[in-house]
Amino acid sequence: FLFLFLVAAVLTAEHRANAAGQCAAESEAWKMAPCIQAAQNANAPVSTGCCNAIHKYTNDPACLCAIMLSKTAKAA
Image (spheres, one colour):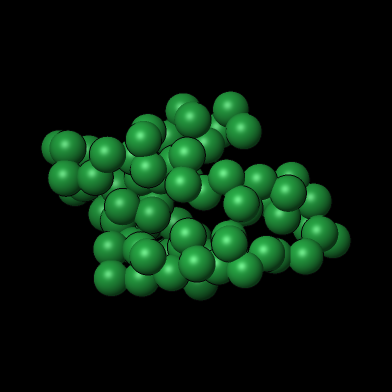
């Protein structure tokens, strides 16, 4: 539990640092559409398209975090 809390704290800090516009989170969120099924159902398989979409943000976890916290992603 402590580990998850620390990860969440780091990601939140990175999200705030990225909020200055370095990542177009709302428009980038649409690129995560292949992940919707897996995000809504823990038993659904994760598609290759979803893995590819997430892989693009390997070097920019702050952007990925901002995308996941975006209004677009939350609405999905």
